[in-house]
Image (tube, rainbow, N blue to C red; front, side, top):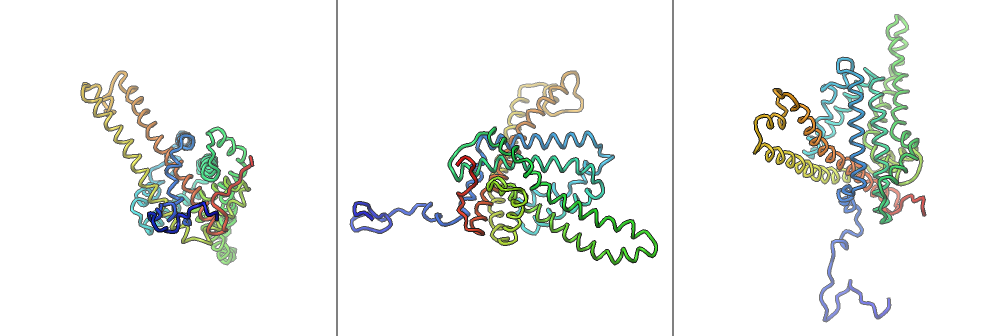
Length: 369
């Protein structure tokens, strides 16, 4: 070192003690990088991508509900979501056993519904997974470029990159489900044989094979459910194909389950806190607007605000417009949640890759370099 340079890490007689900054204490730690996810999710371009994704998900479910009435398909009834409706509460408790049980209950119920009504459920889940994959890829790509290279990317560029990779996105999101469908079809072939005399003995013996295939089905679905955001992030960060992205996500989960669980816990606590605050502010804004607007209005105006059943004339239309405004604000909140989900998976992937492969967290695929 040149004598003219001062070593700030060693105390020098006659000088003050060197300052120890927070970044000095966390320089060799990976988990503090996870704390950047909420701020990254606030980026206007990524937030806007999340809003578009949320809108398209609402649109898909609305079209599905219109095409298949609740009487024809159990997937549109309230009973179709007993587990998933409880996920926000389970996450807020930070109780690992409750979270796992809630996810397992919801997943098991949906698997039963898919088996009961495979074609209509396929019409719902296929576009949902593709939307999640496309916009998750775009958000991850934008977040990883900003974190690793310090460059900002606009909404159009991120979305174009995702659309150019749509085949690999489809393989990443739908590929495991195709494998599950094939295995499930094989197991289902036992059904006709079990109903035949004498031959049903052979089917009963083949049941052991069916049981093994069902175990494989459950393992694939569990892995896919746990690593879906991570595999989408792998696809966007590595610039690889869909199969390799799945392999990476599965390998990291198997190799470092405890470390990945710790990262997930940190992100769940952080994400639940931030999204709860954002949701409270949004609901508070709606309540404040209603309270102020109802102060100087008459009974007709209050009926418009509350959606009273006795509305008449143009009151129902006015109420629908107000509902649209409130839904737009709620959609913005959900859009931030979508952005936060994939910004979190971006940082989790970079950190778990560093732990597993020793690859620097700022090393990403950059086709422009």
